[in-house]
Length: 210
Image 1 (cartoon, helix red, strand yellow):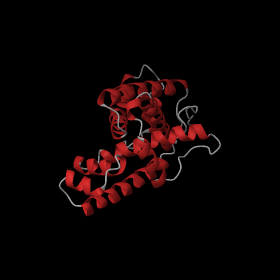
Image 2 (spheres, rainbow, N blue to C red):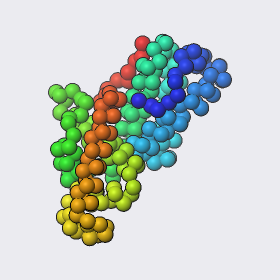
Image 3 (cartoon, helix red, strand yellow):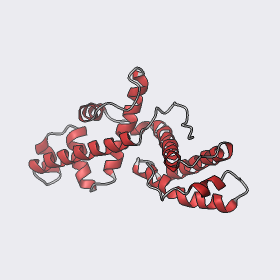
Image 4 (cartoon, rainbow, N blue to C red):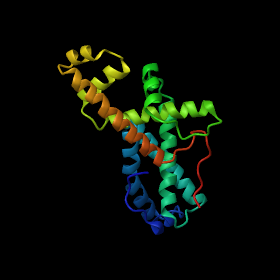
């Protein structure tokens, strides 16, 4: 869910009127930062983040004018979070250089349960899993010291032996294994957060709030 201030239903309802400039100014000032924070945590660049913010706010404006939200504020934030995630997915899917290595894919499949997708659609499930795994790793990467991440990535994803990694980073084999354990724990925790956000498939229709 977006880390945004408490939703104000009355002010959001006022945005159904395109001529209410005060309401629209409040809306943009209130939600630009939370949307941007979610984009940056998910591995987007500042330029990509600006594009997503503008696109999400445009979709939101169209949604408010076409069908105003009712008073269930949680559904509003859930809808906005969902739209932001779908747009992040679209951006990341176009960036071929962000695809995970075969070694990373194998380990992520071992560390984490399946994605939150229909069991019957295997191709969509596979695509969603890889996207969410990449988001998971990006979110963890932004919260740990760069050196720790480099040790973890070299040991796990580049499959270098622990003695070689320890020597390269002037540390001990024990510390290399400890860093791996802590990173995997962080990845699993971030995966649980993504599950709570209840993402849909990227090609699914946008959710309609009541």
